[in-house]
Amino acid sequence: MSNHIELEQASLLTDLKCPECGTIHDAAVINTVCINCASTLFARYDLHTGISKDILLGRPATMWRYREFLPVIDEKNIVTLGEGFTPILPVKNLKKFTGDNEVFWKDESGNPTGSFKARGISAAVSKAKELGIQAIATPTAGNAGGALAAYAASAGVKAIVYMPKQTPKVFKDECHLYGAELVEIDGNISDCGKLVNEHALLNNWFQVSTLKEPYRLEGKKTMGYEIAEQFNWQLPDVILYPTGGGTGLIGIWKAFDEMEQLGWIDSKRPRMVTVQSESCDGIVKAFHGGQTVSEFADGGFTIANGLRVPKPYADKVILKVLRESNGTAITISDDEMSSALKEIAKNEGMLMAPEGAALWQAYKKLKATKWIQPGEKVLLINTGSGYKYLENIM
Ligand SMILES: *Cc1c(COP(=O)(O)O)cnc(C)c1O
Ligand SMILES: [Zn+2]
Image (tube, rainbow, N blue to C red; front, side, top):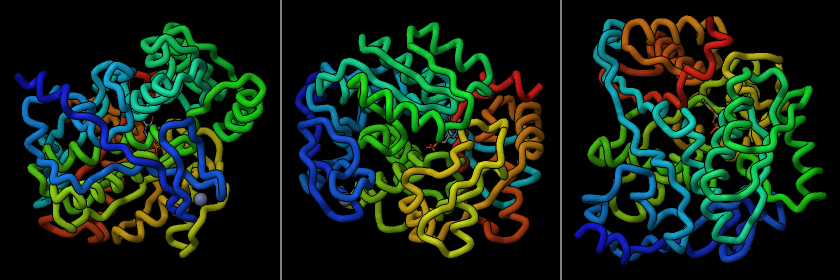
């Protein structure tokens, strides 16, 4: 029966809007960034239709359960490997550190290809397929490349992945296994980005570089819908997020806005916290320095390759979300990440990506300074599996 209802529901996508200059873009054609000011574009939906959250009852446990608020018009274009609707797990055996806070993990490690990149890439590849795109390229610190390679294989389109040479071998192997073309670069993800730009233009490839196309954001946004649904529509007080390009942070915030417009949640919002590696601390510096944009910051290698983003393309939006939410920003060192990862593995039975483990250390610090108050409910987003990182951890 529920299948019948599902078929009648469709995407409520209306258009794309530039959050900087307000220009509206047609969502029925291929878009990258704003044609006027080069800002990231935000997809908009018709949210005033009185749609009830009961539509979710009986839907499959993937991010596509929210498909009215995802950009794919024709269901047959959805490229899914079962991503999303990941569990929320309470901190259990490490409770001696959390006192009277309720602390939870949203555990993204079980996603296809072992990270939450699957969400964004599932949405972007699906929409690319709908728009007739044949070849998709991306710069990556590791996880986005693996996800693109897998979803492109499933969609039957070509994937070209640009990755720093220093990335652990497993990230390269998975690209090869999924049939992608892998280009290794002697440099960081910014260097990869420059080359993808040039080569994509020459070869007529579509680029899904972080926040330079509108739909990876839509996929990652589904974490926000899930957080609300899984906490029974009562958002936590604080959310900690390991920030690379910032897609997840911006996406979660966008989801909260949409759900408020739908009448699914009230106006109460969590305080959002960016956690960066000491190696790439541009957002932390800009946040505490009162700037609206960040400076290029690259201190070299970090075990958290997902956090080695020297200057996020949407730095302005990240900083805006942190300030609007009364949030903050904090850095964690590789040593701290490594010992947090081991502590969590040994005590909780969860092997996290260092990006996720960093949040545990950040949580302890913010609690010690009383930025996190007694009694507050805290959510830590473990963005990926630790299994792909063992080469650098052991
Ligand atoms: C990409 C990545 C991040 C950073 O995500 P953004 O949305 O780009 O900020 C964090 N953790 C892991 C494991 C990643 O792969
Ligand atoms: Zn614009």
